[in-house]
Length: 113
Length: 115
Image (cartoon, rainbow over all chains, first blue to last red; front, side, top):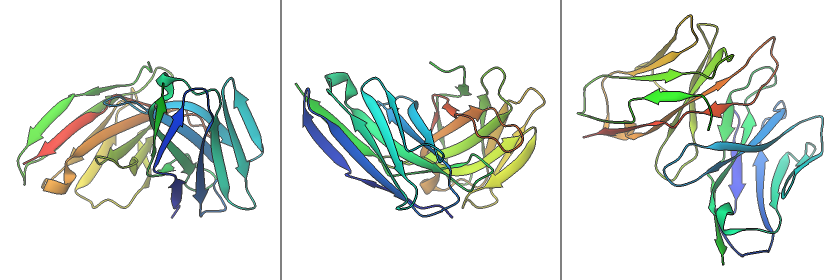
């Protein structure tokens, strides 16, 4: 099955700086890679996703890059703000033709004011 | 907020008991996936239902079972509860068609505590 590793487990950044979270996956058939943000006591919220036919995708201050050869993908948050503080999860689809997800263990991001 | 709802919000059960959790998918979605999220961990895939049929299962024992109804809402049943079953149970709805992938949107979860 798919195995997703996520690093770092915790990340503290100064407000205005950038944050980068990296994930690796094992199943070369995976072709969908979403990122979720989960605030304390709340549901995971989809913040951005990327499919295997794309190398990079941006949405305002958030960007995701994918390297299929190396089987890793990264989340970049620029100009961080206190409301970016949360746990972020990467995920990879399990197989090509379905959309079950395997999640990383999460990164707790703290933005210091 | 997504249109995915779950009930109940919280539940306390005793070891050995059975529990049923419910999920209403977002309007227009025909696929429901269930995940177990232990404290401090990422969600773990339990199983998925597509058009009322199971469409894949993760590494969970048979005492975890599910159902999807014609309106695409879904139930997760857990028999013979164990202490390790204590977790947040999340359902996610999506639109599946011909193998294509659509985004999964999570419900608020049911917090299950087994004592």
